[in-house]
Image (cartoon, rainbow, N blue to C red; front, side):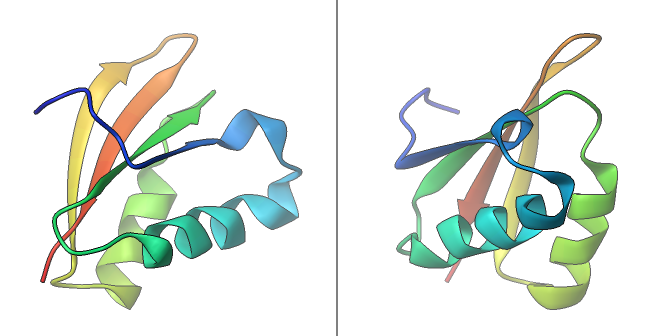
Length: 79
């Protein structure tokens, strides 16, 4: 996957109660085929499951870096 991202969310910069809201708002602002970069300080697996529930066929998920300090995930918007 190319390193060209339409948006970046560094979840480490937000309080826990705001993280998922900001991530979903950013994702929802993408056009089909665009990709955002998520940076986090832990594996965002719960977020992945939330995407599966709320956007079941509408996203792609690719780990670019898996810790131990930083997780980088490319989240793409489909259809």
